[in-house]
Image (cartoon, rainbow, N blue to C red):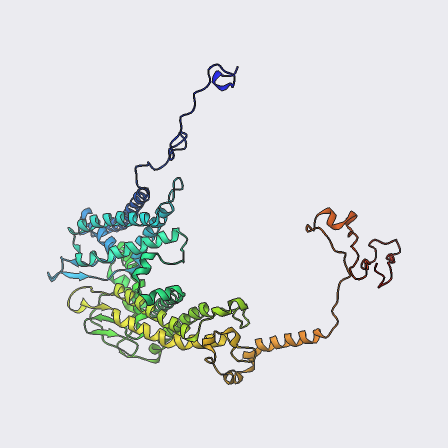
Length: 571
C-alpha cells in the first residue's frame, strides 16, 4: 500500500517544500565545510598555522632525541637533562642561522659562536617546505586555500615556536644573539615556506603578480618579460652547483691524501665511542661548509684560519694552534703554492663554461643535433649576441650573490682573539665568482652561439638571425681553416643533398589509379563497396569516361578491364 503523501490522488496532498536559501545545504550530507560567517581565507590560514607548528616541533624533537641519546651514552656527562635540552634548542636555532655567545669559558671572557653547520639547515628546510606544500594543497574535502593564507599561516605558526625556543635558550650556556636572531630566521622561514607553496601550485612560471611588478624597477621588469632573468637564474644556479661541487671534490681529494692524519685526529680527541660518534657527526654536519671553503680557495681569495692567517692557491701562511679535528687535515701546508695548487683554477673555468652553455641553450636552441636552430616559425626567437652576453653577465652577478651568501653562512667566529675571524670573506668570494664566471662565460657563450648558427659552408645563416645581428658573427674564413673532422656533419648533409639531386632526374613511381571514394569515413561500408572493392567512379569531365581500373577490380576472370568509349568521345 502506497503512503498517502506519495500518491498523486491522495486526499491529503503533501505540503509544498520550503524554499532553500542560496548557499545553504540541501541535505545533511551536503553541508558547507565553512560557515557563511567565516572569512574564506580562515580555514587555509588555520591549517597552515597548524602545519607550521608541527614542522617546528618535529625538527626540535629530532634534535632533542639526538642530543639526549649522546648525553645518555656519554660516560662523562657534565650537566643534567635540562642542560641537554638547552643544547638541543641551541642546535635547532643554530640550524636557522642564529649566532650564540658561550658565557662559560676557561678565560672567563664570553666567546661568540657564529659558524652554522650547513647540513643542519637541511632538516628544518625540508620540514618547512613540506608544511607549505601541504597547507597549499589542502585536505581535498573543501575548497583549495589561497596561496597567501596558506603561506602566512605556516610562517606565523613556525615563528611562534621559534620565539618560544629563543626564550627557552636564553637560560642555557649558549645564549642566542638577538640582533641576528631577528633577521636570519624570519627570512629563512619566509623563503622556504614560499617555495613550498609555489611547489604545490606546480611551480608556475607565468607573469609576476601586479604588486611585485609595480615594486620592481623598469629595467628589471623588462628582463623578466623577455625571459632573460629566468635564463640567467637557471644558469647561475648551475654555476653555483659546479663551484660548490668542485670545492667538495677538492676537500675529498685532500682528505684522502692525508687520510692517516684525519683518522688519528678522531682517535686522539676522545677514547669513548660515544665521543667519537659525536666528532664524526659534527664533521659530517660541517662538510658543506668545507665545500664552500674549497670553492673560495679555487676562486682565489681563499679563507682565513684566524685573525691574520689565511690560505689561497698562491701561498699559505702558518696556521695558528688549531684543535685536532678531522676536517683540518685537508688544509694545505704552509708555504708558496705549487702547480698542483694552481690547478684548482679549473673549477671556476668549468663553472663559466657551464653558465655559458645554459644561457646559449635558452637563447639559441639546438635543433636535432645538425646545427639547425629549429623550424622557420622559431627562427625569430634566436637571441642576439649582445643579449646572450648580457644574460651570461647577469648570471655571473647572481652567481656571485649566491657564493657571497654561502660564504657568509659557512664562516664566522669560533671564539675571541685569533679565532675571531674564521672562514672565507663573503665579499671577496662573491667578487671573484663574478669575475671568473663573466670572464670565461661571455666569450664562450658568444663562440657557442656562432657555432650553433653556422651554415652549410661555415657561414652565418642570415635568414635565421634577427636583422640586428647581421654581419656580427664569426667570419667564414675562420671555419675554413678548421680540420676536416669538424666538418663531417656538414659534409654528410651535402652528400645527402647530392643524392637527392641525382634522384630528382628519375621518373617518379606512381601507384595504380584508384577510384575516388565519396565517404569521408574510411571504415564505412559504402567507402569500400561490396566485398571491399571500390565503387564505380563518375566519368571524367573532359572525356566522360571512367578511369582505367586496376586488374581484377570490376573485371572478368581474365583480368581485362571493360572497354569504354574512345578518348575524345565524351558526350
